[in-house]
Image 1: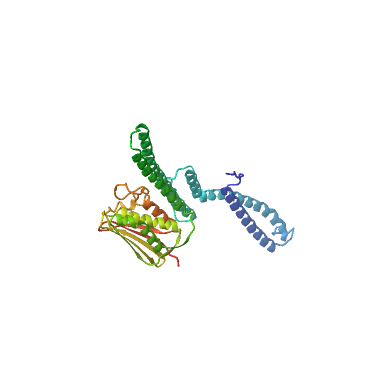
Image 2: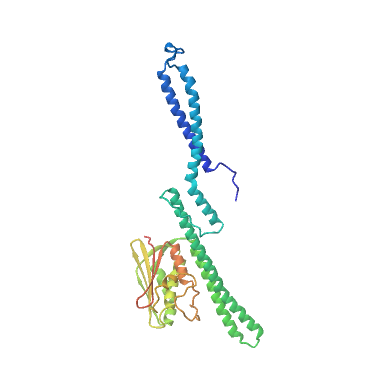
Length: 360
């Protein structure tokens, strides 16, 4: 970063400005007084009987007093301006110190400026809010990185163990080892792709285009229909044209994750999954509702966190997931300026409602 040349401080600039205005105002006042005095005093060196007021006597007595008054005003302006500027800029100093602490990595510090509302208090409140969001975001990223490292380390450790077994036991069935390696590597690849997709949606670097959520829902349902039939679950798509603006690829992944999550966490057989789209005023609404086991209300808010899973399940099939499904959904909805609402159904299962800005 380029270093700036040193200059006058804001406090000194305010002091000089205050003193300058005070001196100019004093000079104008003295000039007005002097003008009025000269207007009504006769120009008579001797005066009446040699003692009456005249301009010559007024000049000799007025100018020294005016010079003293101007000097006092200048000194008073400098001292008073310095004190007033320091008092006015004290909140800005606190904000600067807090920014310096934040720049060094300490995001837990808060200004919490007291007093009545003004520009500095507004700036302080905004800065505190920014620090709070930054601290929350950094903590979330650190937790996400730790979870991602743990999730990636598991398949890599399994792969190494399988390779060690194949190297130390030549009689072991190679076909079984290859199949297990393929399964583990597939999971590692799926996890990596999910992490990349989550990062892309978090950055919001995508081209927006018109998207019909009803068509996206039908495509996702058609893709996952074999999984629904395999599990004996009825999958239905209802609703009409629901237009929004965004990335068709990301929105398709969002709906696919919602439907897949609803299928995987459904009852073993005989359950239902309903996908419904509709336009409500300025919002395009997508609802995914599924039957299933009852969910504790305190568990629902954590489902959108990375690597959180609502229920235990055997992770043996190709749709086992990596614990990022709803986290990706939340990220995609947020990147499209929408809202995501999760609510447990009284009879079991989950109701997910996505609201996105509607477009004509």
